[in-house]
Image (tube, rainbow, N blue to C red; front, side, top):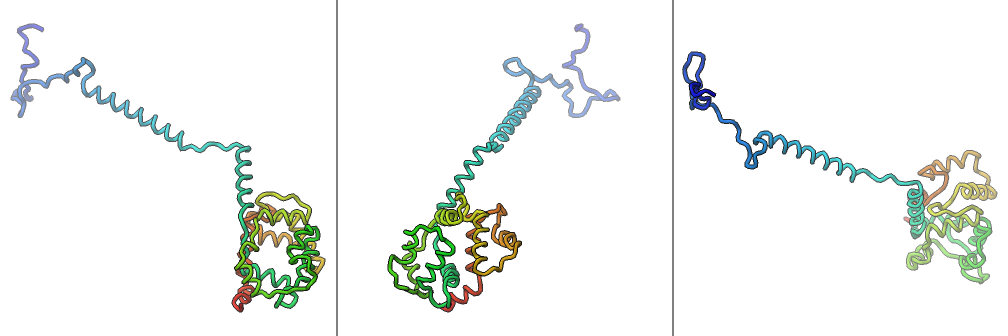
Length: 255
């Protein structure tokens, strides 16, 4: 630059009329300084920081999405999990309620007032002909031939006082039914479809009241998950229906 030319630093800022601009110091603003290391000016550094922050946020979001994404369960793992859940259900204990005792009492009793040893023996022989002899004797009260009897109030009192007498697991019940109807016993299944059909066929031998379509109607009522068998959760629902029966409630109210 020639020494005769005016310096840009000392040049005064004027308007179109040649007058100095208000508030002007008469000098052009200095260029943005470089940083201490001679790098980019502050504006460029801010842009770089913003880009770095954006990239970091994107990586963080991608990492978070990868953590939250559920693992895909293999068929083998799913089968193992289902088997463990079914086994846990089968190991749950059954404690008979007063309503269930009343329902069983009405089914066994011929007069609605008492149940005799003969009635229990006849029931077991008809519905559970393959029951082991040792278990049959235990249910009949030993080897005595005396035709004992018990009323419902006494039965409720005894079983409430000796709760262990009325306890079993759903797995125990499943094995008993499966053995009687010669079907496989599976964890979580109380009555497989063949066992349900076999029970209906056995009941029809006493009093044929079941039409061909009644099996489907029965399963539609009791098989809540529609898997073709009565599982533990279905059985719990059956117990609820029993306890809600008005006839059973009237009997319990009279005790």
